[in-house]
Length: 290
Ligand code: NAD
Image (cartoon, rainbow, N blue to C red; front, top):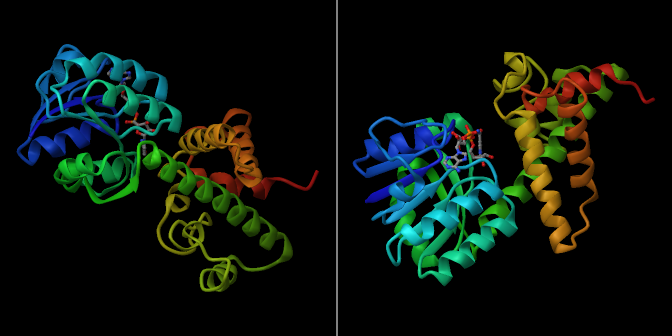
């Protein structure tokens, strides 16, 4: 396929390189001048989009996505697909989809999980919102860049799935960390706590697959001095998007709000920036009730 790729950062560059390595004709653009292996560089987003059957964007936020979409949609051929893989707010995803539809183009919102490791290895998971026919056309590209793509329904539903998942993840990571810190103070051995909880009703991905306590459970960032992994500031970004969506949809999300507030404090007022999101455990270890 002829693909335009816009946003060649930590995630975009390896995704574009995997598409090129699979034999697709990839033309890419990044404002910072970044490139990717096997790809033809373009001097503007418009140039990358011209003649492309699919234009993929991997950008920092919804405001930038809206700007880039306004620029590239008119340059795309009729019926071409704008495939946004960034994590952005649901409202921006739906606004871009409306704009594409009004111009006779198709749009998919397809945020990912799997991080930079998954982008490089081609093992991302895509959560996809938008028209079914566009999902079918893009399916071979998801298969190159990832291991799984789930069609979640109409436009914006991919972003909705991503932020709901990450709201659960942020909240369960916090409560797993505070439970370990409480167990310490109660004299309960961490390994015993893991052995019980990981096979009892308190189990979760945070406990079982990504245990925040060093030396316990499978290998995780806790075993690597809490180097990310999934950085606390990226978790904060997703929790803020979840709270923004909850505000727009008038949904009551008190635990999501508490998680957003805690990660904001951790990243902005403490030492959380640049650390894995599971570094909440050493944070709680240091704290007392007051
Ligand atoms: P990044 O900052 O490394 O890359 C973003 C790129 O977009 C940069 O190279 C930047 O120069 C470029 N850019 C900005 N404005 C542009 C414009 N107007 N035109 C062209 N290029 C432009 O970020 P990243 O880590 O690659 O993340 C990209 C997206 O993926 C974000 O929405 C992020 O939330 C999401 N995401 C990241 C991860 C991760 O682990 N890094 C995991 C899942 C999802």
